[in-house]
Image (tube, rainbow, N blue to C red):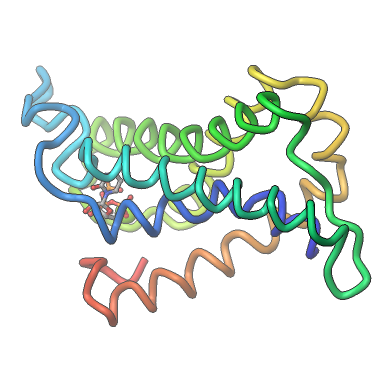
Length: 181
Ligand code: CTP
Ligand code: MG
């Protein structure tokens, strides 16, 4: 469980940080598709994408720094994101991939007629995990396979919806999220 959260931290943070720092110009430029609906909607902005990626990468780098001081936490050995620039790439694909997953799902949500912010249980909670995994697997297949074992993947799939729901409720009450999901 701890290992699963540790590996996913650079992918978890970007979504919350996008909600905190997001706003401004939407990525789809306000464009409407032939179906009369927005391509992505006002909930996906450049500022959210950049700030989210940056925050996720900063957290990943802090984690790498932590590993130079200590090899684990609560007696649990923690894995590294790789060596040198390989680690930077993994941290980047985890952070950026999570936002791309969320953004891709917004595209499909708009095509299905869901308005911005409409809840889609399970999908809302796992789209960013899938994006982070897919991009990281493509960019660093060897690192991915040796770190995201079946038991880690299972742990992530169980923990993520719980973490996501609780952080969104916090986000809603501090006023950065429009809906508590
Ligand atoms: N956000 C952003 N840019 C992104 C992702 C998120 O600015 N790339 C901000 C938006 O202000 C958004 C908030 O974070 O409203 C919460 O994100 P999310 O729940 O993913 O967006 P929704 O508004 O629910 O839109 P959607 O229905 O498309 O998921
Ligand atoms: Mg949403």
